[in-house]
Length: 120
Image (cartoon, rainbow, N blue to C red; front, side, top):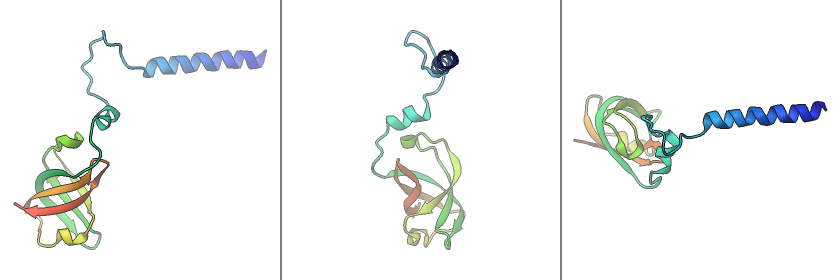
């Protein structure tokens, strides 16, 4: 009897959780933005991503660079300041804080890795 009651309660709780997490029906208008999963599902996860920005910090020893970059529509990112890891630290040579640069990210599946940095 206790097992049956526990099973019924567990099933009911799972149904409530599933209902709360379900997507609205097609007839229900919504103004919410697509989820991150939906955005990622629509993206080509291979190939380089390009953007522009201003160098705000370089740590050659750690192989990192921070850009105040423009929005990157290819991966759904707004404009922001963000640190990236250089796939090859040599790409950081010849740039300095304050430089306006164009840069290339490895791919949508590895967007925190910068592969090319060029002064504009």
